[in-house]
Length: 110
Length: 113
Image 1 (cartoon, rainbow over the protein chains, first blue to last red):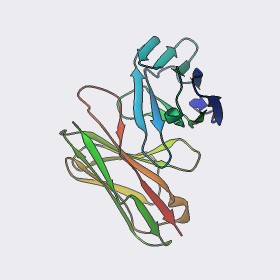
Image 2 (cartoon, rainbow over the protein chains, first blue to last red; image 1 turned 30 degrees about the vertical axis):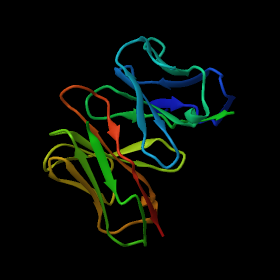
Image 3 (cartoon, one colour; image 1 turned 90 degrees about the vertical axis):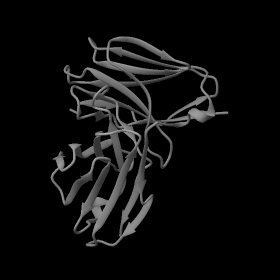
């Protein structure tokens, strides 16, 4: 069993829809959770990070962590074509090693 | 602000040839530095990390090596490339004093032929 599971998609939604991206994990020692956005042939860009259970909001993006269920989500409101990218979840129990999900490829259709 | 550079951006090399990829970070001091490889359709695999000059930790045994000759310079090398070394190589940095997030460079796309 992988430490982090992420549905690879692809996921295709119309512009303006609410998008939900999810990851589950098996290691209860994970304490730090991040979401990255990666455009084609580019390096990943940090979108959001959180260190605790609950919700964290930044503009159209909301990160949600449920440590009891070992489940994290990223919600995108009012999705735009420019949001089309691969989204990677990442998590860590310590300082050095991030464990990444496989990434979900998202397409927003105009 | 901090900036991370990688070069070259794209590289095509024959099997058995050597490799040298370079990463430099600007705007910070004593960063933690990381090398990852991303194969097509896969997540990121941590290859090496460094907490200081000359200090290298290896995560995956393979024919690659890393060096950190200067505080903000990280180099990924190989003496003889294999076909399986093809992939997208990413360098990342972290400010060990304040956070756990890592910030990535633009990447080098390596094709071994």
